[in-house]
Length: 389
Ligand SMILES: NC(=O)CC[C@H](N)C(=O)O
Image 1 (cartoon, rainbow, N blue to C red):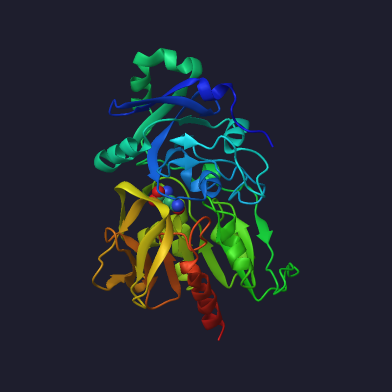
Image 2: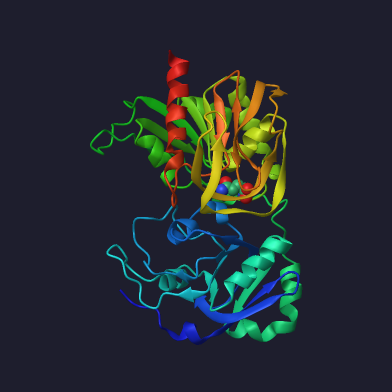
């Protein structure tokens, strides 16, 4: 394994925010330039899963944890086939990664995948700025790109906003594929013989999500974002799942129409993150952009159906606008907010009371993150069992 004290470590770099604030540091990963929405994530661990989560498409992620890269990069923890963040901002990169699974350094992997980063900047000051002013457009420029400095701000300001961005089709699979159910000893259950079949609409799905279903005896047919209701029902599903994904849920009219067709047939339904926002819209609620979002792996959420509080993984910049303290009448019967974030009262889950459908805004697949919310996959199984009974 190579370590990362290469030339890039001395190359100057600058982070330019759309409001004109700049942070000077050194190149990290690839040298060049990149643009995206600057957001901060408070996870102390799990950078490999974060960087490969398709929901981070077109975002420049700031790690609030001061030391990043300590455990290097391995061949097991990717949540998709590539790194999706458009840029990465760290304070103090590990000079020598050390972990028994590490195959290379984070720095090398960022460079290999052409991801431009910056290190050596005051990430506390940057995070406080984003917290006070809100997430905003930004650019990272390193090497020769720094020289064009007076023009960089105008180039950042010319970038598209995250509000209004439709990104899920870019990141989703183009071809359907099957994740076979897993038996008690971890062996794959032959296709067609699993206890349950789920059609999962991929809007940017993380790899751990079908895995969490597979280990509960579910055969998961992952379908492209452009799937039709006919494609879904062609797999004869016991349940339908809508995944996480990048961009503004207000743009996701196609998935909202598709989910509406599933709700009309009363098929058991589960959604995560973008999937929760789509359920919100299918029920007639609005969505809105949060000032700086929730990103990290220690967010307190209350399951209002049991009163229990769980510590959970989050990555969302938008949220559903639904009333917290009343049952709503929707075109699919009564619906209520099932989960709420205890930091700020943001809606973290929805459930229908008259048919088997629910969703959460956060990440029960927990990659990375605590496993407190794994019970939600069991709830989905119960809904499918109930429908069969
Ligand atoms: N992880 C997700 O699915 C994120 C959903 C949506 N893009 C948001 O930022 O809120």
